[in-house]
Length: 279
Image (tube, rainbow, N blue to C red; front, side, top):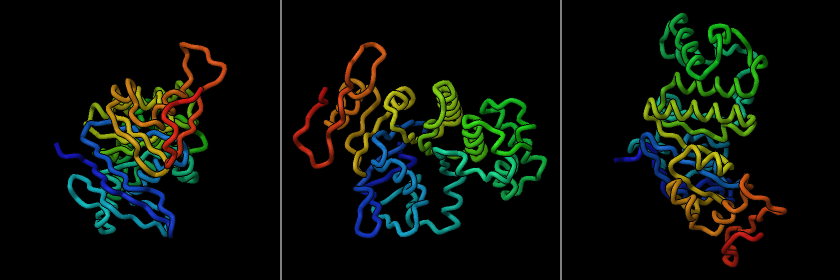
């Protein structure tokens, strides 16, 4: 089966500084792939390169293909359609991406109305989407403003916008970072259900290994702008192949054992001496 998203030798440069180094990945319909690593490893930059929403001055090389179409060669009109109906992103901080002076209804219905839907139909579909992500009294929620919502509720609104777009790929960029454990579980359950019902593929960006292995079937480990390894979730849990991955896995706290000191991640790119986790 052909991948829905495929990247090969993907590089991003800012002037003389290379941020992403030859990133290659494949994402198939219905697959959930987690990209894990420390902050600053290049995970979010990879999603921005896939969507071509990089900061001004960034230069991209290599290729990104969506269902065989070259994304880096798309014209502006093609890119707009690609970013909405084909691939959608759920950002880490919904407060930064929802206009605070517009209602939730205006945020959710804008794209629908631009696409020709009448106001009443757009509101009906937006309310249904809010209900799908577990928000009570969705009709009332449409007339409220972002400051009236908690962080977890706003993240559900972001997911509702994805429900409305019905894309083939979801890029979830640390969608649960600012949420409590209970809300985090609810949000990931919504995404899992959405993926299973629609066949959407999902690329989950996270620094949380437990979350990644619990919700995704494939794990890619990233460090210093490079993908170090990609394995199935089961294979990764049984035996991470890269020294950095082994250290990262060993550094996780466990509820089953007591440790006075957690192992430290000491491996850095170019360091060939460190082969395992040190206590």
